Length: 74
Image (cartoon, rainbow, N blue to C red; front, side, top):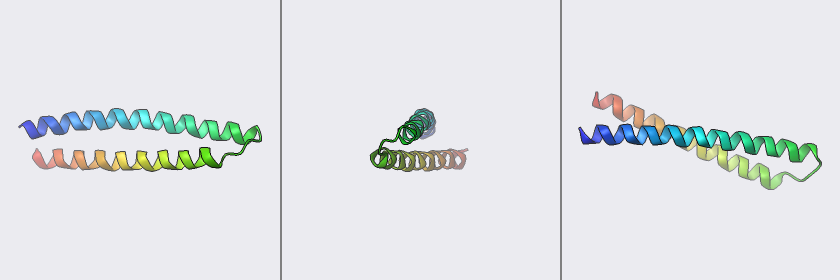
């Protein structure tokens, strides 16, 4: 039973992390576009955005693993 409680807690944290991460990605994407529009170099900002998107994808994969583990325990 404790494993299931921990999994649910982990899922809640993953959901929060994903929501916050998605907001950060959106802000960074907007910043890249603003920089580009204003004629600034965007290579570093784009590298950061790419990294942020990769991290978000990993978090989503982790969430899927947690959901799968919870389904197996039901």
